[in-house]
Image 1 (tube, rainbow, N blue to C red):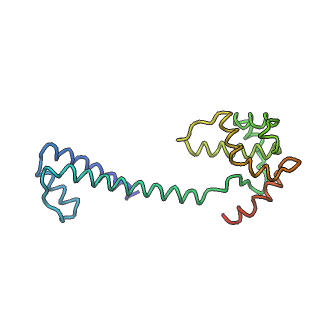
Image 2 (cartoon, rainbow, N blue to C red):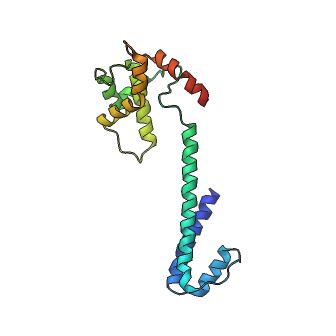
Length: 186
Protein backbone atom coordinates (compact mmCIF):
# COMPACT_ATOMS: atom_id res chain seq x y z
CA UNK A 1 0.00 0.00 0.00
CA UNK A 2 2.80 2.39 0.88
CA UNK A 3 4.57 1.96 -2.46
CA UNK A 4 1.40 2.68 -4.40
CA UNK A 5 0.87 5.84 -2.38
CA UNK A 6 4.45 6.99 -2.91
CA UNK A 7 4.33 6.31 -6.63
CA UNK A 8 1.00 8.06 -7.12
CA UNK A 9 2.23 11.04 -5.11
CA UNK A 10 5.41 11.23 -7.15
CA UNK A 11 3.44 11.08 -10.39
CA UNK A 12 1.22 13.93 -9.16
CA UNK A 13 4.33 15.93 -8.22
CA UNK A 14 5.91 15.25 -11.58
CA UNK A 15 2.80 16.41 -13.42
CA UNK A 16 2.70 19.54 -11.22
CA UNK A 17 6.36 20.22 -11.93
CA UNK A 18 5.80 19.84 -15.65
CA UNK A 19 3.03 22.46 -15.35
CA UNK A 20 5.31 24.75 -13.33
CA UNK A 21 8.08 24.32 -15.89
CA UNK A 22 5.82 25.45 -18.68
CA UNK A 23 4.83 28.52 -16.62
CA UNK A 24 8.54 29.23 -15.83
CA UNK A 25 8.36 29.18 -12.01
CA UNK A 26 11.94 27.98 -11.64
CA UNK A 27 12.40 28.59 -7.90
CA UNK A 28 9.65 26.13 -6.99
CA UNK A 29 10.82 23.68 -9.65
CA UNK A 30 14.40 23.66 -8.39
CA UNK A 31 13.26 23.08 -4.78
CA UNK A 32 11.05 20.16 -5.78
CA UNK A 33 13.74 18.68 -8.02
CA UNK A 34 16.23 18.81 -5.17
CA UNK A 35 13.70 17.05 -2.93
CA UNK A 36 12.77 14.35 -5.46
CA UNK A 37 16.36 13.57 -6.36
CA UNK A 38 17.59 13.68 -2.74
CA UNK A 39 19.79 16.67 -3.56
CA UNK A 40 21.69 15.07 -6.45
CA UNK A 41 20.20 17.55 -8.93
CA UNK A 42 19.63 21.07 -7.67
CA UNK A 43 19.06 23.14 -10.82
CA UNK A 44 17.78 22.51 -14.30
CA UNK A 45 17.18 24.65 -17.35
CA UNK A 46 13.61 25.65 -17.91
CA UNK A 47 13.70 24.29 -21.45
CA UNK A 48 14.46 20.74 -20.35
CA UNK A 49 12.25 20.68 -17.25
CA UNK A 50 8.96 19.52 -18.70
CA UNK A 51 10.69 17.00 -20.94
CA UNK A 52 12.72 15.59 -18.05
CA UNK A 53 9.70 15.23 -15.78
CA UNK A 54 7.61 13.57 -18.43
CA UNK A 55 10.41 11.06 -19.04
CA UNK A 56 10.47 10.33 -15.28
CA UNK A 57 6.69 9.86 -15.32
CA UNK A 58 6.92 7.52 -18.32
CA UNK A 59 9.62 5.52 -16.54
CA UNK A 60 7.44 5.16 -13.44
CA UNK A 61 4.48 4.15 -15.62
CA UNK A 62 6.60 1.50 -17.37
CA UNK A 63 7.72 0.03 -14.04
CA UNK A 64 4.13 0.01 -12.78
CA UNK A 65 3.02 -1.85 -15.92
CA UNK A 66 5.75 -4.44 -15.34
CA UNK A 67 4.54 -4.92 -11.74
CA UNK A 68 0.95 -5.34 -12.94
CA UNK A 69 2.05 -7.95 -15.50
CA UNK A 70 4.02 -9.92 -12.88
CA UNK A 71 1.06 -9.80 -10.49
CA UNK A 72 -1.21 -11.15 -13.23
CA UNK A 73 1.26 -13.99 -13.85
CA UNK A 74 1.27 -14.83 -10.12
CA UNK A 75 -2.54 -14.87 -10.07
CA UNK A 76 -2.57 -17.12 -13.14
CA UNK A 77 -0.25 -19.61 -11.41
CA UNK A 78 -2.60 -19.78 -8.43
CA UNK A 79 -5.73 -20.11 -10.58
CA UNK A 80 -7.35 -23.51 -10.74
CA UNK A 81 -6.89 -25.67 -13.79
CA UNK A 82 -9.72 -24.90 -16.24
CA UNK A 83 -12.25 -27.66 -15.81
CA UNK A 84 -11.13 -28.58 -12.30
CA UNK A 85 -14.09 -29.49 -10.15
CA UNK A 86 -14.00 -30.54 -6.49
CA UNK A 87 -14.07 -34.22 -5.56
CA UNK A 88 -17.50 -33.88 -4.00
CA UNK A 89 -20.36 -32.35 -5.97
CA UNK A 90 -21.71 -29.15 -4.43
CA UNK A 91 -24.86 -29.73 -2.41
CA UNK A 92 -26.50 -26.52 -3.59
CA UNK A 93 -25.92 -27.13 -7.32
CA UNK A 94 -29.63 -26.92 -8.20
CA UNK A 95 -29.99 -23.63 -6.29
CA UNK A 96 -26.95 -22.12 -7.99
CA UNK A 97 -28.21 -23.21 -11.41
CA UNK A 98 -31.64 -21.73 -10.68
CA UNK A 99 -30.04 -18.46 -9.52
CA UNK A 100 -27.97 -18.08 -12.69
CA UNK A 101 -30.09 -17.67 -15.80
CA UNK A 102 -27.27 -18.44 -18.23
CA UNK A 103 -26.39 -21.70 -16.51
CA UNK A 104 -30.07 -22.61 -16.42
CA UNK A 105 -30.21 -22.00 -20.16
CA UNK A 106 -27.12 -24.18 -20.70
CA UNK A 107 -28.63 -27.07 -18.73
CA UNK A 108 -31.99 -26.72 -20.49
CA UNK A 109 -30.18 -26.88 -23.86
CA UNK A 110 -28.55 -30.18 -22.97
CA UNK A 111 -29.64 -31.60 -26.33
CA UNK A 112 -27.43 -29.14 -28.30
CA UNK A 113 -24.69 -30.91 -30.20
CA UNK A 114 -21.99 -29.12 -28.16
CA UNK A 115 -23.56 -30.05 -24.84
CA UNK A 116 -24.86 -33.56 -25.61
CA UNK A 117 -21.55 -35.19 -24.65
CA UNK A 118 -21.77 -33.90 -21.03
CA UNK A 119 -23.76 -35.35 -18.15
CA UNK A 120 -26.23 -32.64 -17.01
CA UNK A 121 -24.79 -32.10 -13.48
CA UNK A 122 -21.25 -31.93 -14.91
CA UNK A 123 -22.39 -29.46 -17.56
CA UNK A 124 -23.99 -27.32 -14.85
CA UNK A 125 -20.76 -27.27 -12.79
CA UNK A 126 -18.63 -26.35 -15.80
CA UNK A 127 -21.07 -23.63 -16.87
CA UNK A 128 -21.02 -22.21 -13.33
CA UNK A 129 -17.23 -22.17 -13.48
CA UNK A 130 -17.31 -20.17 -16.73
CA UNK A 131 -19.88 -17.73 -15.28
CA UNK A 132 -17.78 -17.32 -12.12
CA UNK A 133 -14.76 -16.54 -14.30
CA UNK A 134 -16.76 -13.88 -16.12
CA UNK A 135 -17.81 -12.36 -12.79
CA UNK A 136 -14.16 -12.18 -11.67
CA UNK A 137 -13.14 -10.42 -14.91
CA UNK A 138 -15.55 -7.51 -15.18
CA UNK A 139 -13.47 -5.92 -17.93
CA UNK A 140 -14.58 -8.72 -20.25
CA UNK A 141 -17.82 -8.37 -22.20
CA UNK A 142 -20.93 -9.64 -20.47
CA UNK A 143 -21.69 -13.20 -21.51
CA UNK A 144 -24.58 -13.97 -23.80
CA UNK A 145 -26.03 -17.39 -24.51
CA UNK A 146 -23.90 -17.75 -27.63
CA UNK A 147 -20.74 -16.60 -25.84
CA UNK A 148 -21.15 -18.98 -22.92
CA UNK A 149 -21.87 -21.84 -25.32
CA UNK A 150 -18.71 -21.02 -27.30
CA UNK A 151 -16.65 -20.60 -24.11
CA UNK A 152 -17.73 -23.97 -22.70
CA UNK A 153 -16.99 -25.63 -26.02
CA UNK A 154 -13.58 -23.91 -26.31
CA UNK A 155 -12.51 -24.73 -22.74
CA UNK A 156 -13.89 -28.21 -22.31
CA UNK A 157 -14.91 -29.53 -25.73
CA UNK A 158 -11.66 -31.22 -26.70
CA UNK A 159 -11.35 -33.08 -23.40
CA UNK A 160 -15.01 -34.05 -23.56
CA UNK A 161 -14.55 -35.46 -27.06
CA UNK A 162 -11.63 -37.58 -25.85
CA UNK A 163 -13.50 -38.84 -22.79
CA UNK A 164 -16.94 -39.35 -24.28
CA UNK A 165 -16.23 -42.12 -26.77
CA UNK A 166 -19.56 -43.73 -27.54
CA UNK A 167 -21.27 -42.39 -24.42
CA UNK A 168 -21.32 -39.07 -22.59
CA UNK A 169 -18.88 -37.69 -20.03
CA UNK A 170 -19.84 -38.27 -16.42
CA UNK A 171 -18.51 -36.46 -13.39
CA UNK A 172 -16.42 -39.51 -12.45
CA UNK A 173 -14.73 -39.66 -15.85
CA UNK A 174 -14.02 -35.94 -15.68
CA UNK A 175 -12.52 -36.17 -12.18
CA UNK A 176 -10.32 -39.10 -13.19
CA UNK A 177 -9.04 -37.17 -16.20
CA UNK A 178 -8.35 -33.97 -14.22
CA UNK A 179 -6.70 -35.70 -11.21
CA UNK A 180 -3.09 -35.54 -12.50
CA UNK A 181 -3.42 -31.83 -13.28
CA UNK A 182 -4.95 -31.05 -9.90
CA UNK A 183 -2.09 -32.85 -8.08
CA UNK A 184 0.54 -30.86 -10.01
CA UNK A 185 -1.09 -27.57 -9.00
CA UNK A 186 -1.78 -28.53 -5.40
